[in-house]
Length: 538
Image (cartoon, rainbow, N blue to C red; front, side, top):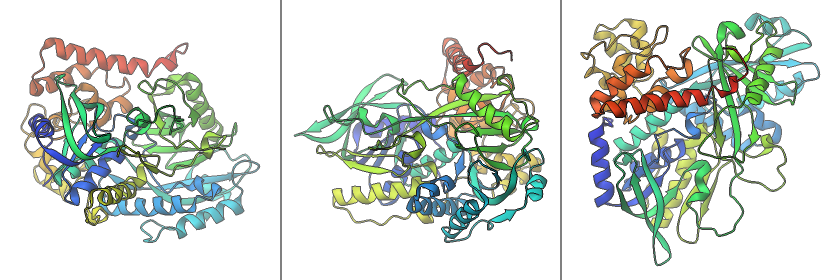
């Protein structure tokens, strides 16, 4: 049974970090670090995972939410990358059905833009061929009238047909959290808001790390035979490489949420922007449409990534070209967010979109093992490769078993919740995010089954579960990553924030000053992500 990641569990984890030696200390609580901790723990290695912020608070919680093979990588002949991603996608669909859902995509072919019909049909054939298990329906070619039947509001100017294929979609932050909890279930110590400030070395070799508890401000050393650096765009901050060139070439990706009735897409649509030919996604997310993503070099502060007006305008321009009746403007944007891709720097890669999404493992002379690159979809395979290397370094023999493990709520959670008298639609919604056991203990709490915000599926019991079962430590953790209010509420959850802070504070022992600080911090986060609206009425 997956342990509840409660405040008490976090304190116990901190105590173990202070006292116990570990085989592997993983630094970074994004999808890759979580996957490595899960894999290592399931092989019987004494494993710890520390994250300086919240789980999935970096790149892994700011993706396009796609679990996919990467159709566009075929044009650069990245067959191996696509094969691996397609097969990992299929595995997630089978093993994590509550978290990862199939999604139909229409990809129109237009005269003089993007891939022509012949190229597109061949690409979709290859994409299907690389799927060994045939988990999803096979591709189909659509005539222009069939494309318009599926997506009536798509532009018909120059339309020559289109492809229909399937990939998958997931709430990225909740997928990360499921992997973290699976790691804990296998015996790993997992602690968020635990920042590695420096590595500890003995005789020139890394032997652990200095960790600061950002909640209590205390610092201590953690002993580990091997430290794995899975910090994404912060990778080089832990490596001792002198004046060596940076390992990464971070690129920035922007996404926006719009009302789906404004855009008009029925399902998922793949676009090629007229301006530069970049492939973009228009994805259904309940009553909203998620549009993304941009891909531009980034040289700014990696700790402060916010959407810029020019990037938002680029996405809206592409949407309005594809869906002429949308006429979307900045004021229509419900929310926008930005993230950085930790891509490996390559000589000769001129365009951002040409940089490989493949991962790479680095073993430094001091023994630090680092990994970067890759994608959300391939995290399990990346983790397997890293832990294989770790086992060789540690002289341990243990086979990977994560391909057989499940993630997220089990198939019976919805039925269990309905059995408790919860309305079917509400039970189904809850079961897509929570195991019934996580909610059962809190269903008698005040207003447990009442919605937090009108028109959205998030309930007050989920705030209780976030604190008591999911190690949510701040208001932002709940509003942004445990729930979707930051993205989906018309005001990004600002009106609900005081009541959420009050409910959290009663469990975490916050005084009035701390609650007010959390509320003000959240309002500031929302304001930062709305600055692209300056000069526009909302």
